[in-house]
Length: 171
Image 1 (cartoon, rainbow, N blue to C red):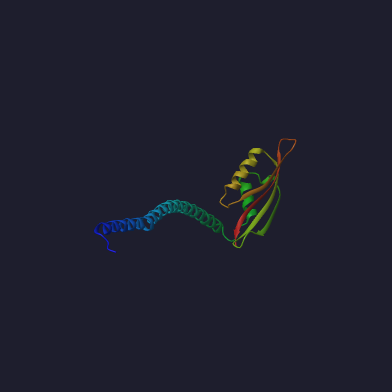
Image 2 (cartoon, rainbow, N blue to C red):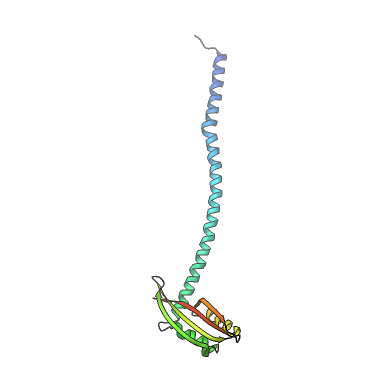
């Protein structure tokens, strides 16, 4: 069987077309799909990077705040007494005469800090005196936190107050 020139050309063209189709199906289309997939992945990774940068900034801010708090706690010195500091604030605010009861307790907060809790009872306070005293406690350099604030009104219009004030003490 002899193959004619025309048949050779047809077979060559068919092989060329098959080769091109093979190249398109098995090389170009998968490469294009992989590029699209990588483009989508790149967009996702850029979003993740932006989130990581944002969280990193938040982490740095929290770390700076923690260092500032630790610095302030250590600046108080070893002989710091929460009860004495609260009495000093009361004296400065002219409410020491209203302090009827005070009790200091210590407990373990975590492996780095102990917590000192002071229970205070005040009698015959005006709302203005109480507000100023609470403001001075919360905004003092000693990092006090007021909790369990109970206010009872007397028939005279004055207030009886009990509260717990706590602060951390480095170990």
